[in-house]
Image (cartoon, rainbow, N blue to C red; front, side):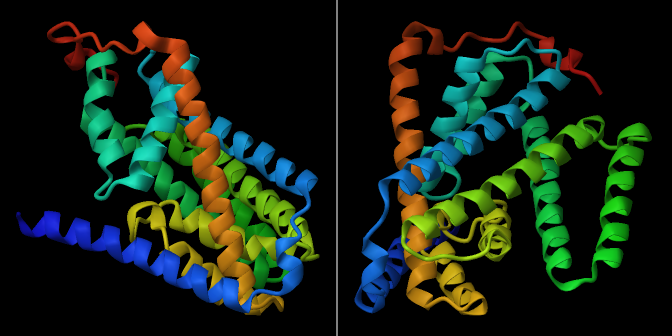
Length: 289
């Protein structure tokens, strides 16, 4: 076994050991009201997770549209859910690596182009998190100037692009803002369902962290690491650490459950439509630049 494989497995087991260790600590120290989760708030959280999934599907379609590929929404949804589930369960971004082969066989795109697009999308989401953090600490005037300059920079970069996919940047930026808003609403719904009443803007602290961690993988799916960070953030909005840990764990479980159900349904619905066909020879050389 090579060094990289050992590191991947170590990250995998470290994440899950940390996850269950933190969850055990949080259960022992959680307020009693935390377990009286209101079904309606839980249902609203699930609904918001579906909106999150829709944004992820849209982001993938932006990439395909750049290559003039007509939308096949059910296949795109299948690709998105399977990648998310596999990356959460298995180490070393196994879902992305496995599905890159599926993508390049089905559509006239190159695997490194998809990685370049995802790098740009990840950087954009990180910048949105940085803007949100700036909005929490700066005066409104300074933040407005910073946000306006960021929007201007996005459209200038799209107009005078020198990097592949910069023409997609305005759409990617809007989707990244959508991701962030979804995380805010999801954690506000979830915390209210757990009997914790907080202001909507307070849930932005959790949203900033989760949105940023979605771009940087410390453990597979950031299992354990995410709960540790949310537990550390909770006291800054006058909540016990256990609340942050449990909120992160419930959000993780709900997201995996929702994506799992969608994936299974799509596997059944598509059936033969998932068969991979080879791309004609030479078609990858005709991709836009």
